[in-house]
Image 1 (cartoon, rainbow, N blue to C red):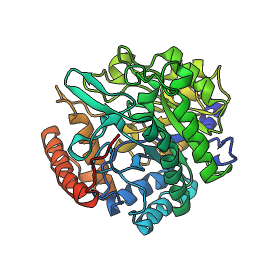
Image 2 (spheres, one colour; image 1 turned 30 degrees about the vertical axis):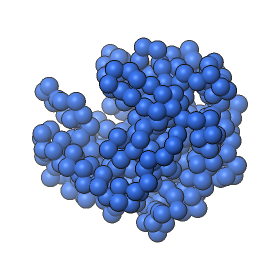
Image 3 (cartoon, rainbow, N blue to C red; image 1 turned 45 degrees about the horizontal axis):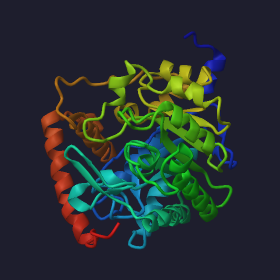
Image 4 (cartoon, rainbow, N blue to C red; image 1 turned 90 degrees about the horizontal axis):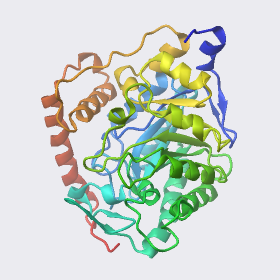
Length: 405
């Protein structure tokens, strides 16, 4: 694309959300599972510093991935958990230091459901499933009806300790995404069947969260454009879900895709390269007036600008690019720095690249990423060893993991 003064300025243009909150520019650090909590659901010094680094680096908004409101259903033992046990002083420090220089900081409120980490949970989703070696229990109607209150309590705590908004996680195969997906959701009550019924619990969650935090507090959501699984959420149904979201009080819809279901294709495999969900975002723009964020495969400044100038999105989400350069937002807004150099790995094992990026996040949080030279086997070993230690801590901190669903 030919860059002009107008297109350059677009990266630094502010965005007013429907609730009235202002994002200072169009660059968002999208959620990642940073695995930097202490194993007991509380922030570590490295995690606090990590989000401070991104704020110093110029982002409009950082989203903390996989924050749990129910310790029985975590994605990983390094997740934050918001609840009565929480170290409120540490959470307040995280919120305060991550919101410097006009940045927003939102926890992504989630529930892993059927994909809960088995070493520390009893996975349960919308329906009991046995698919190959994959198994999970199904949730009772009573348990489903308790979900909106859990999300609302978690959001209220986030507001009380100083976070500037929240994001509801309904993507990537975790619980609310499972409700949207006919592969996971085989219920025959009011929460299963049509896409309207499969969206019902999400609408109920949004209503309860909004009631808990008030009209001026940002509430976003992350949703799949497709599960990229046979029998999963299709793009047609995803568009219908976005039409439904358009009638709620949501402030920002982040579009993503794919799941962590065993054997699922990565979004990069299905997209053919380049930004993954821009084409879908163009279609979504036709069915909602809520601001849209497109995330996935945006690796260059040109990618970001084209996503915005084409009208596909109002903000762009960056994850691994901002792990490679935590000051990328400042560099791109000022046009003083280049695009990050993405590493290549020969025949990486499953989960290896995620482990490498996660260990680099740890280095950023310790202000030593300039010395980060870790190879994949070392990253995997350290990542798995840390998870194992944190599982033991988790089970001591949250001993009552088994419950009726």
